[in-house]
Amino acid sequence: MKNIHHKAKKSLGQNFLKSKSALSAIVDAGDISADDIILEIGPGKGALTKELLGSSGQVLAVEKDRELVELLEEKFKKEIEDKKLILIKGDILEFQPNTYNLETRTYKVIANIPYNITGAILKKFLSAETKPERMVLLVQKEVADRIVARDGKESILSLSVKAYGDVKKIIKVPKTSFSPAPKVDSAVIAIENISMKNFNGANGVSEERFFELVRSGFAHKRKVLAKNLENSGLPAETLKNLGKKRAEDLALGDWLDMAKR
Image: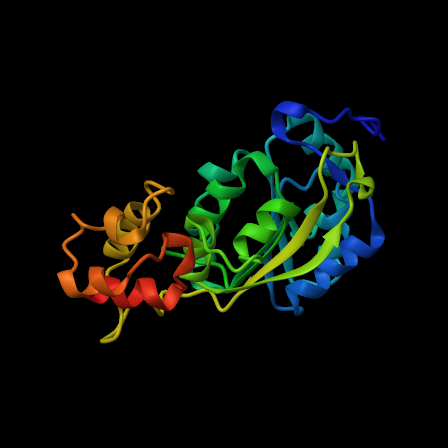
């Protein structure tokens, strides 16, 4: 098979997962059924792709590296012919779900993603008009801990994810599980029940207002929250009740309540 010794490209954030236990953990967290459409980001050499093909109805794999696309075309020739695998050469940040009719079908995003675009991927799919039902992502461990607010301190990142779904950390994946090995450990996270429930309906709040408040609240980390929000249009009583709290001390529900005012 050509390109079997493909050298990872640092510019594309390529670190190929080789741990069978980590691959199994990712697939298990996906809760995949035979009817599911799976969107895989950066399939690389196809280790996770192979596992996903064995569990799902169809896999759409988006790969930016032309050499890897050629490798995958050869490796999964039969699956591509059977339309079990749709291999797409392109940038995931330019991918449009409706181009592949995903707006009319449930799909899940399951991937070992390039870590340098983690935030952009989360924003793209969580705020998309056509959201996935679930996302299972392999990310840097430090980022995973921030997203689940492991230390009890929220961030713009953790609140931005929790506003759309329920997030949990599944498993730590040591750096030795990759080739080449990255400099830091990784972790698998799952985001379930992705929806607009906090922003729709009679009890919903303005999505734009919510993020405006959160950004303002975290604008100056050394200042207390009330000071950061003094020009936000919130009632004086609300600001007074915040006391000496900082932005990181408030849970998602607190921010949603403030956005309603």
